[in-house]
Length: 268
Image (cartoon, rainbow, N blue to C red; front, side):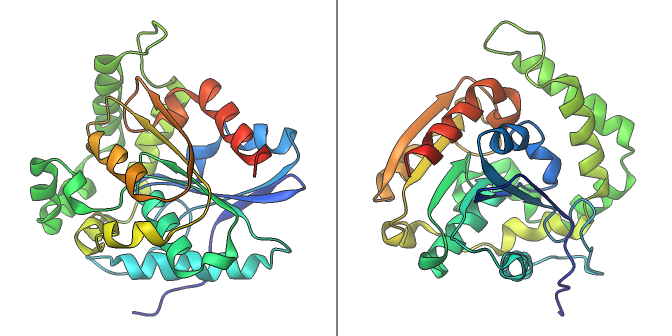
């Protein structure tokens, strides 16, 4: 499969580069609350739509493979021609890509921020693993589900979790709307990606970069216990933070998440 080099991305601000990598069925809008803070504090923020997501190219394939997405990411980072190594911030599948990039190109980055990172298939609940093993069914469901129904499901999930500060919803309204839109504009073949990832556990001990690890204790997509396993395996975790949140604490708790990232960046 020929992987296209075209990439939809944004760049804002001047200063040390920070690259933001979203998760499965999301987009660069995952970072809408973080980018302004990075710019205000003197960083150059880059956020992309991964292959098959958002407004980046969508391959004519019913079953995406992770090495296509990784190759697309690497080519895009190379095209930026940065004058210094960036810090990579990755959420979920973006965490997998961040770890894999650090493993393969250790001299090209300064540090890692890992948000509910995906690094082995066993992190997924059994039912979700079973679902991903049926990509044709997943693709059909996604293709036939209207955006309004996705929105109802997202709203119901957000309400059921609540917010640790007392709000009714776990996620703000604009994020819920964007999440539903991103689901619908993701290429259906993307849902095969979890079937194609390698277990990164044996490689974690070789990733020496300073790392900040953040996760939600109510994450129902990836087992929260797996994040403590990750911390034990990575040699240079300089800070950790747990939020009473679901799978997207960078969105549900941005007021607390953003200062953590900024402090980590200042201390590098």
